[in-house]
Length: 124
Image (tube, rainbow, N blue to C red):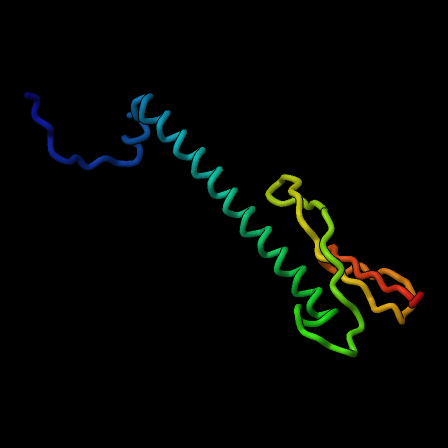
């Protein structure tokens, strides 16, 4: 049986001169790749959730809280619309909430800060 020597003090220059075995370097490379992919996926997921919450907050600001009756409401929720945005260097699909002004007003669209469009229409 072979004896294992005790710990040795190694300087940074000596550590650079004696590289790790190829198998260990390969395993570390795979570990770094997996960590990068996982971190990017986590960042994109969190980013999408934040964007969704910002868009929903903007609709709530314009039309009021969801599910609450308001006789004097100037606008109402009008479903969602498919769209896409660049996040993490990739185009990802997003679902944008839509709002529509009440029928008593004249038609025009207002582009909001998070790519949300509010359409105002006149009564028919």
